[in-house]
Image (tube, each protein chain N blue to C red):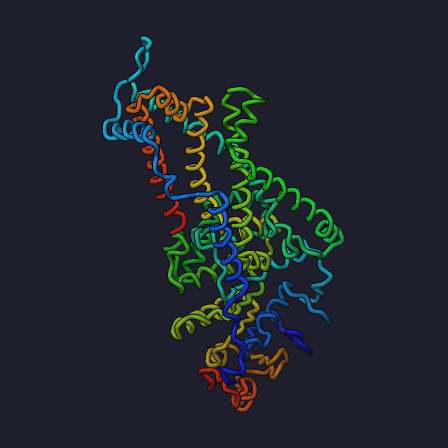
Amino acid sequence: MSLDSLQAPPSWGHKTTCLAILLLAAVASWFWLELSLTDVVPSRGGWLVARDFLSRALSPAWKSEAHYIPPGTPSLPWIALGAAAQTLLFAAAAMGLAIPLGGLLGFLASSAWWSDEMIGRRNKTARRFRQFLCPIIWTFARVQIALLRSIHEILWAILFLAALGLSPMAAVLAIALPFSGVLAKIYSELIDEAPRAQAHALRSAGASTPQIYLFGLVTPALPDMIAYTFYRFECAVRSSAVLGFFGFPTLGLYIRQSSASLNHGETWTYLYVLIATILLLEIWSGSVRRRLLS
Amino acid sequence: MHALSSLNLAIDTGEAVAFVGPSGSGKTTALKLITGSVRPSRGQVLLYSQDLSSHSPGELRRLRSRIGFIHQELCLLPHLRVWQNILVGRLGRHSLPASIRNMIRPPRKILEEIHHILSRVGIGEKIFQRTHHLSGGQQQRVAIARALFQKPRILLADEPVASVDPARAQNTVELLTQISREQGLTLCMSLHNLDLARNFFQRLIGLRMGRIVFDQPASTIERSQWENLYQLNSPQRPPDVP
């Protein structure tokens, strides 16, 4: 067969068109928003504030810079460490809720679980279940995941602050709900993308459908699922710190207060503690991920 | 388009049979018919005189739990330890809670049994290693051990030596035929290597484009039959036609 008789794919295909549209949209949005690179240059007042703030980067405070310190107040490093611990506690509590909820929704939203090869079409009940109930459950789970994911944790926080007040539960729910949606989406995709060969092998060895799902699909996807969960825990720590700006006792609260009082040395202390917390978490979760994925 | 047509054959209990033929001839489908993973569009598959299509899903599971299947791609769970991969072979005989319990904390008796089988295939010392740390040949032995742990009555092997060197291929086929002979298992293996098929199997079934080309003792197969099976006039020659 000569080369001329073979049909070459078009040089400008569907993917190239999509890429071109995305690029055009990006350029158009710059024009629409009237963005200019000169906007990144601060005003004179802005320069002064930035200079004051940045000048303390290398000399963070070790003592409180407030004018009045009530007696019995712990030293600044202890306050910063306590705030870091609170930040971690909020993140851990939120993940404790997000993981089971995400796991359940991910399981329901996974197409692999509802496929013919898992449920089978051997008997009438299985056929009816496959035809009518499965699409309803699957769609319900997908809609739930989309709803949870589409609202940012800050918006959830505003909602729960109005409903529950400044209670720890409001912060935990604000992080847990969107995170459960994200986890569910990734879990379901990882399970769906797991190679099916092991599942087929288990079926031919007489395993039941739940066993095939658990050992043939979830188990191969588990290292990636755990690695991703660790990554989300890091994100939860960052979100927990940010929620401090709403008044929850995490690092964000102390950063906001010191920043508002122009105690830039203190602000840097809290920022460094936040960075150190994230770095330590990154090192720990990175080593766990490497062990799982190697 | 059918993977197999006019397939009519009987395999006795304890017999060792090799399916040979070019790629796409229907060897794997023939093996899958035996487990009921593939259902025939017409005709019957009788296992121990019972029609597979008449079995309920539960009965089919019980039946499959006694059929050891060694897959070409091995189908192991790479992140699990060797003993856990072996244990997977017996899922069909345990409930879900029991299988989870065994996977986390296996009884000593089960571990001893697994160790015994692994020692039989020559990798007893690897029992606690992670499977993806083993070499390809060792992983293949794990797959064999998993099938044997099922205490099968029938052992099916789909191209078990497709991607191994000739020496290891011979060892593997020898091991499988020896174990099935010792334990009185029915062995069905699909093979590309005609030398191995002739040396280790009494009965060979040649498949081409889903049809049986020959079904006779290995010693009586003539060169012209091999040539016909692989259509040696075509550009795709098998590497080791005797």
